[in-house]
Amino acid sequence: MEALLRWGAELGISDSPPSSTPRSPPSSCLGHSLVVSHFPQAGGRGLAAARDLRKGELVLRVPRAALLTSDSVLGDEKIASCVSKHPSLSSTQVLIVCLLAEVGKGKTSKWYPYLLQLPQDYNILANFTNIEIESLQVEDVIWVAEKAVHRAKSDWEEAIPLMKEMDFNPQLLKFKSWLWASATVSSRTLHIPWDNAGCLCPVGDLFNYAAPHVMYEDINESSLVELELIEESYNSNTSYFEDCKHATKKLDAEETDNSSQRLTDGGYDEDTASYCFYARKGYRKGEQVLLGYGTYTNLDLLEHYGFFLSDNPNEKAFIQLDTDICSMSTWPGESMYIQPDGSPSFALLCALRLWATPANKRRSVGHLVHSGSSISVENELVIMNWLAKKCFGILGRLPTTIKADNKLLTILDTFKSHATCINLADLLSHKEELGRFFQAHGLQLEAVSHSELPIRVQKSLERWILAVEWRCNYKKTLFKCVCYCKDVIDKIS
Image (cartoon, rainbow, N blue to C red; front, side, top):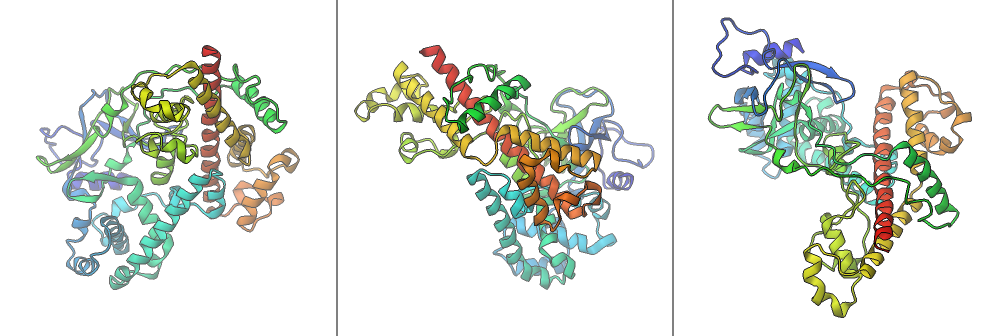
């Protein structure tokens, strides 16, 4: 890291005010506003405030000369000549090839100190194996993951002729190398006005993701206890509303305009010919300084960045809707979803209200629906009952329950932390899923300990845990929707 910061200073990267002129060449590009630090519970390695920072204050400048972009690499005439023969490749494919070309140069690459600091592996969806994808459980999400894998392989195959022309060594021609470079570009590039593929920004990409303001609380322990009873009631065919009212409390949402903070943390400044980063809020010395990537659902974050947030106000839980419901409005399908607190989105609520209205009356009540007003108590009861049953039905059809997922995550966390063998006597309910995972890697569950796992299996385990965490959060949102609907029904009945 010291070598990277020293190299950055030589290229003009700085966290000092533009007007300040050091008496001697700095040995580090950081120290005035930012320092590299470690945040175990908040993204790992990141940047901390070296002093108290004011909101909107310039905290880092990265000159264009330091950015790794397609055009900067294409300054090499040989590379530029080869790329020009393949106009069908996308700008992103070209940037991936350029990144691999710089890796292939080794120590002679201008960006060598930066390349050494890049992660060796990523957990984005394109890196998921079949067993990890299956663990997502939700059919539409499995399709998204499979599509990501297929797209990565297709992009690689299209770029192989170019990479061969550029005399890439056999290691760089492998799909594994392409996946690494593709994930680097997907998770670390920043927007620049002259290239849709973006740029890799040394030092600037050390900022961790600024989690949006948490608007909703998670299900608490007492709620989970009652949830277990409700999940069991599904299997015994008892009423899905039984004991649901008190399973979670109604969550109060804070009114926050998250969009006002989107993509205002940094950008390329033409006047200074540098990428500039600003403090998105006031920071105390030692506090982690974060960067807002934008508004993403958890699936978006997992697909492009390889992580997600347990409390994400931008999360959207989609459920399969009948064609006649979708046709009730002009809103696109992606606007009809369950929100983090369990309430239906405005578009979904409007579509359901119209759907539950007799066909001969829809025109006359359309203005009420589109203004967000309810039509009648009877109409509201119909849609809340339908939505609750829909969500509860989905929960019942998924292979595992929230209780089982939480138990599995506890087991896997203990397994990783203590490097102990898994005790089968305690895991009878999870033996099948655990067994499938380890068998997919040619291992026997009975004789597995984390410390003895090959590195590739340890990395696979990390992705598997992400898949289980994602599906568990999805189920919790659907369960909150059931409780939300019951609460509405109780209030208007």
